[in-house]
Image (cartoon, rainbow, N blue to C red):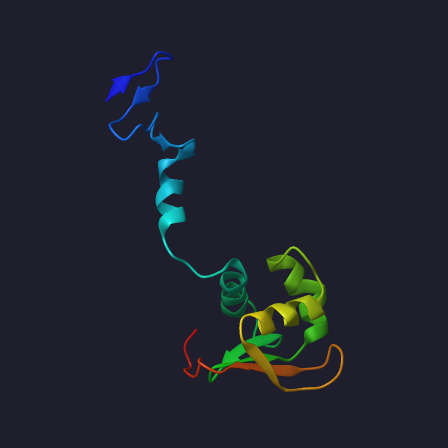
Length: 120
């Protein structure tokens, strides 16, 4: 490792003080990894961390028992919005389809054509 004119350490790849192209080295590796979209990551966290009286994963389905509680408490905790309709739209965008439930803020069930197992 050498020092540049400003006294910063420069590695063989042009990294300065452990950074490449202005980003820390750990962000370089993190951004190069493939990972799920943020919406799905947050959905997974919500299902794992919250009481299943509001939202649950069962037999490859997302069961939403209390949409009003989801809208008022859980959606704003995990996302930058609090609208249940926006949450439903995102589910649709990722291929989930409503298979049970009718009406605004009524209990409902979503399923995905390619997700059939019990695990989340």
